[in-house]
Length: 128
Image: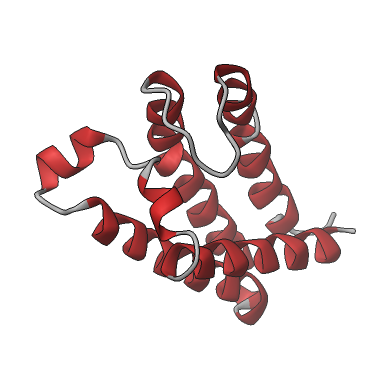
């Protein structure tokens, strides 16, 4: 079950990362908090492209680095935590993106981030 979950997560990460790089770039820019661009000097597109590249690499690492599986899971969980402020900003600033066009939809989405963290950690934990 963990192997299937890890592969599903890996595929999802590669797909999401690819969408950051190509067809979903504009939508993902809605999730970049203004304070990121204000403090780093990076524009929103650069942040989206960088996070997409990281997602592709982490997704690939989930299945290609079996000896480092646990470490990759921890890094992926940390990544999910790191991008959570973008999800909060999308909710607080009422920014539409990916059919998240109501406050309720944006709020419900916030509750999925801890699920992703748990998924990353559980699917990469050693079997007992």
